[in-house]
Image 1 (tube, rainbow, N blue to C red):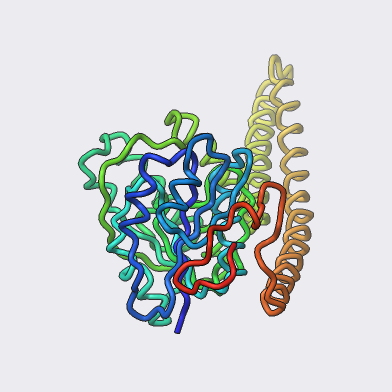
Image 2 (image 1 turned 120 degrees about the horizontal axis):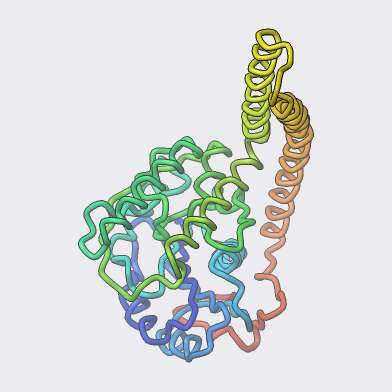
Amino acid sequence: MPKLIIQIPCLNEAEALAATVAALPRVVSGCDVVEVLIIDDGSQDDTVDVARRAGVDHIVRFPQNQGLAKAFSAGIDAALKLGADIIVNTDADNQYEARDIPALVKPILDGRADMVIGDRGPESIAHFSPLKRALQFYGSWIVRGLSGTDVPDAASGFRALSRRAALRLNVISDFTYTLETLVQAGKKQLAVTHVPVRTRETRPSRLVRSIPAYLRRSFLTLVRIYSLYEPIRVFWTLGTVMVLAGVAIGLRFLYYYFTDPLGAGKVQSLILAAALSIIGVQTILMGLVADLIALSRSLTEDTLLRVRKMELRLGELPDTEPGYHPEIDEPEPQRGSGTGA
């Protein structure tokens, strides 16, 4: 039967972590083993000690803060090497209702999905401000369009991944994994679905320091990841808009040139038309180059997938990367959990 690992990225979560871990189910229908993995992202408090006392099975630890996206990615890598067939990611602040984990993994167990997103119903969450609700709604709408999925709550961190999906997703952002992995899943033809989940009000998000900063970084993340998978569409759209703008301004110049032979004051239009047309053509050509790079990236991802599968067949433990110390950070095996992270 499948092995389920519940991973929790943590940064200074000593106050809330014990309650979060205590609420996690240790028996899930359809799963033979349920284990808990903590990724300590450079915490300066007693997060690791609290995790050990709470009885977590595995701990991956970074001496310095690497960011949520890198912590998530490190957890996925460790969980795969620990033999996980299904990985659930949840927050350390006990925001998500742990009792919904069985519902979250059921579509994967049934073979209907590779990724399942917990839908918080952000439009009806009482402690969300009207602005936050609107941003969640329109942000999810944009992500659905870019990814080709129908997930109504793209920013939800409460999600489950099959082993197949976890092997194929590559987080390159250093900000957040939620939007990037959804776009990747859609572009890689992974089966994505969603289930309703319950939440509770917690402390303010540490990821969202300010709404303008969050919007800017989320926008850049989406543009970056979408450009990786659809370079022709992105660059050719921009290039075509510039060329058409140049042609329109050029026609305006010709109109005034022939109706007013002196063409007084219209030379600037000619210069602008030429500049836009040249830049537009160059942007279209850049799209061709970017498409070739995307093909190369696709081959690189296929190679990485094969390397990951080889590592897992060889039974390698999670990498001893800088900041990861298995002899220090791994608690004593519990409940016959075997090797540690």
